[in-house]
Image (cartoon, rainbow, N blue to C red; front, side, top):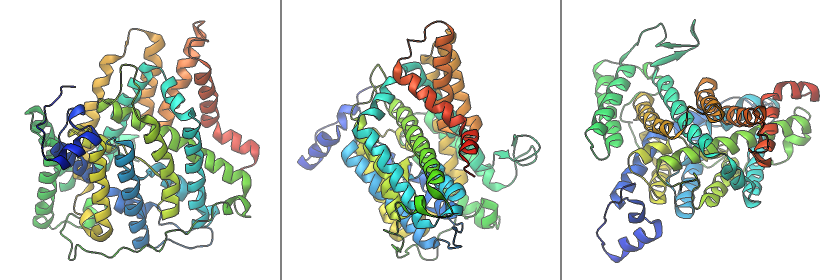
Length: 476
């Protein structure tokens, strides 16, 4: 990375620069502020989406209050992201993990109460923290071969892109083909057009070397969306739920009613769930939280230039610890487990290199405790454009893989494509690790992967065979 000279400023700024190593990482205070705001704009949708995912009834028929979940989501994201910035000093933002919330909503809550479900989040978070404290999680990350780390970055880039295309409505799922252009083979509506225009605008700004290209593109796209929404008389349904309009009152009082409503071990003793089903749920949450965050940290850290020649990131253990603690913090807050967000890459793409950017992102989440209606202004179609842009930038890692070597190319290929095709980062990592060890063994080099990689191989074999295992255990 080219080092950008930074003129020394006042003492306070000098202290800020020294603590966060801003100039040492080739950044500036202004760049970090802009990058943090860009990350927030790209992931602000979680404040709206998480309450929808967690809107189902539990085993007793109880539903969470929408306003309380909104408050819990903003609170947990603010706390964990600020801590990541202050302690971890990396541009990584955390919020309620969609995979975690999805597992809780679809698999756990129908057989437990909401406090019991949040208790499982606390347990999985504590278990991941123990893995970090023991040094095992960092050893696993360091034990993964460098070509697989590059492939993970590529896979995340493709995954981010497909998420952006689907959220924007450019790519449609559930039709006569697994994926299609729009719902019927063609694009429909103003929102997807604004996605295309925002995407092209950001690409043009990047090509021209404009600073803050992503943030500027998001701001222009949001302003255009507000104008089009009013001129074309669109409805919230046209935007997929929330229209880009200035709220009547931007201020809303937070409701902390869910904070602390946790039953940590209740699911294990409940008649509707039981110890075995609860254990399987915790295993699923740990595996998803462990490897989703690991892959995201590798991908974003590599893109930010924070890794060395071996793909190792200084201060990794702190980031991993905070990510693991996020599971427990989210459970206590009532928002489900927190995890590092892929959208952190948007801030990195806009120049963020230090934890100061995370503090900015977390600070805006804290403001959203009182200004939650404002978060609804940025439509998901506009925010999705930033995801596609970052996905394209992360593809540059492909040049670092020796595609002529089948022992490397095969696992790298599977890692890269399984992530977007299955919509699962964990599945991509698992496919890459299993294929790497099997190919090495098949060529007579079974010792080369090392003990840790073989252990991970058996863990992922169990992960992919989880359905028959649950049947064998009598778990329904």
